[in-house]
Amino acid sequence: MAEARERLLGVIASFPRTRLATLLDNYIHCEFTSALFRFVGDVEFHFDDTAKTIHLRSASRTGYSDLGLNRRRIEHIREKF
Image 1 (tube, rainbow, N blue to C red):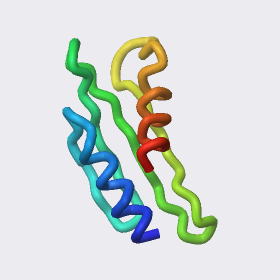
Image 2 (tube, rainbow, N blue to C red):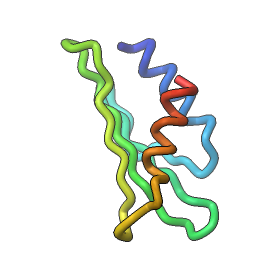
Image 3 (cartoon, rainbow, N blue to C red):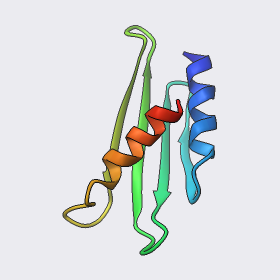
């Protein structure tokens, strides 16, 4: 999982307006800021060594709808990964 973690960190670093908030051996929390209105979205990754799986969560901090931005962001991360 260490190799996958390093690879994912490289993918995250390739996005503009991204800040790593928490970086642990089995957990990454980063913040993505939108270009136009500067809304912040949280993306979390949990590395499950037992299941050999990366669990993720993406959510906007404010508002009712993000018009699909979080889903598109995760799909873009998945494609780059």
